[in-house]
Length: 63
Image (cartoon, rainbow, N blue to C red; front, top):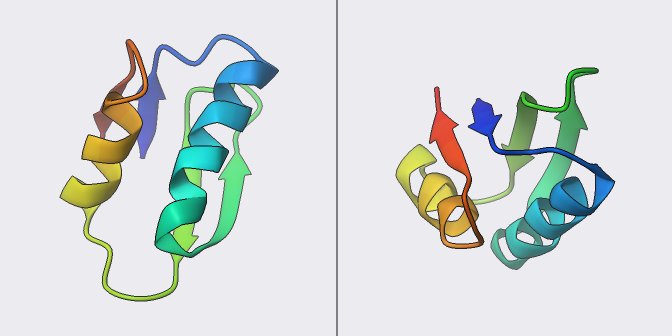
């Protein structure tokens, strides 16, 4: 997924922290910092993940 608005390591840490609530197994960031691969345990949908990330600031999530 693409996450617009990620500018620094703190942004990544904030997103990783909020996603820890839904049993994230792995977050792998691409070098540009604006794309991540996210693997979760359970039944978390794309929409749920998007809502969590976008609720933390000026982030926009796309598939």
